[in-house]
Image 1 (spheres, helix red, strand yellow):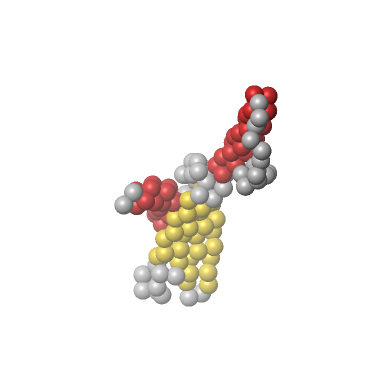
Image 2 (cartoon, one colour):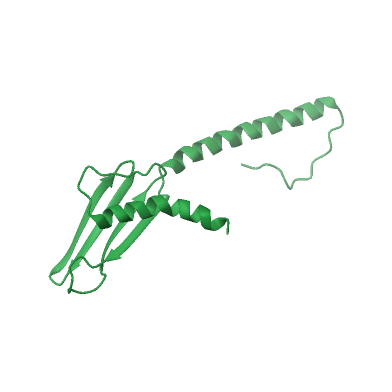
Length: 130
């Protein structure tokens, strides 16, 4: 969408030209507001929050190679993915998250990943003011 910000335009000569110019600006503003509303609707469902926790689920076996990651949208909907690493192999689990909770049982690490994701934006807002 070209707005003509850098175009050299003639100055309006009379009130009719001024009104025409204002009508053009009103149309441009309406188009911009419609685009903003559309983008706001889309952004609500995009990934906005991520929380990650690494841990060792089996004492004495390896290090913090296992993890849980929560990936959420603005309304705390999304998924939590857990990878459990052992000497014998690796297991990966995914659970849906709706409004910050899951219909499936969550481990303490999965809950923490979700909480970190939910807090992430609040923490960023607090740190931005410093």
